[in-house]
Length: 369
Image (cartoon, rainbow, N blue to C red; front, side, top):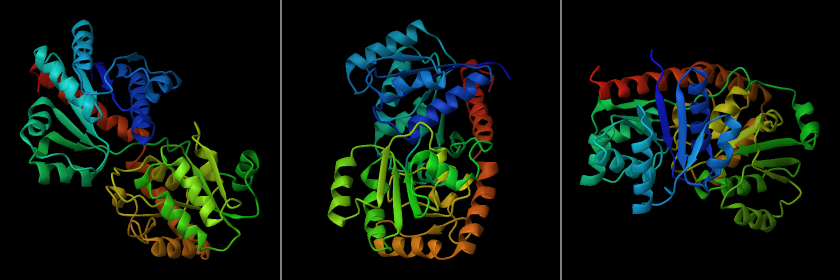
């Protein structure tokens, strides 16, 4: 297997599972001997975080679909040849595709779809996914089927590669020690969520569900994002100030997960296979989630998690209460969840699959496929 030159592009300015996967995957490929670089806007959070992962990064004005960004991308790829370009968001995917068209397609494009939002059905989008991209990667099987069935993309072009987590690191830990370290109460039952504070992650439904639970049950909300002020107002309106902890973004979420009794992710849209849910399951936490996106590939109702409809406060509250009141159920679901995730959702498995995709795409450019 020959070393490849791989360039990731990301136009998003935000920070969440998508950006973390890009950097984790890139770092893993570097460890395997490949040359990997990242192109992104200078103001993007991923630009600042890349160094922490050991990923070389180059700032380009590609945050919006403008001629300035296209010209910058054309100029960069004219000066820097590579084997594969892995695009991740709509804007950078379009800019990379047009840049390759302008330059005579010197590198193959792999388009990764991280979320389950529907792809527009129009002529230009069919070109982007059908001809401009050599391969399309989705983060779950449900997303793969959606692209094939709804958009008519050739089945052999689309590959599902869920995000991988370090299974040797994300393991059950000492709950009391974690709480002491983080300043969380030792004598409370703690429900938690790790997610960017976006509306569709369902934080407000979790707050409303917890408001109807006994007062000795606390809620830990790890993450930051555009909904922070709205959620703080919701906490005040529900009178939950003494029961909710919001520590913001954490570079290391492991101790926060190890400190919890129950993990909840009530997303209702746009999900692939969420990293935080995999991490929580690997830590052995009993989880409550929804069938949004490809979550159902992880959360099998009453087998590896409890699954409730999205935006259903009563069902969410009932599921959380059921777990809190049944230690045997918590132990059974937590153990089954870890066993389910330990193989398919490992970091090594993701890198193996992505390495094969990149090699396959690169071979198309050399005529070896």
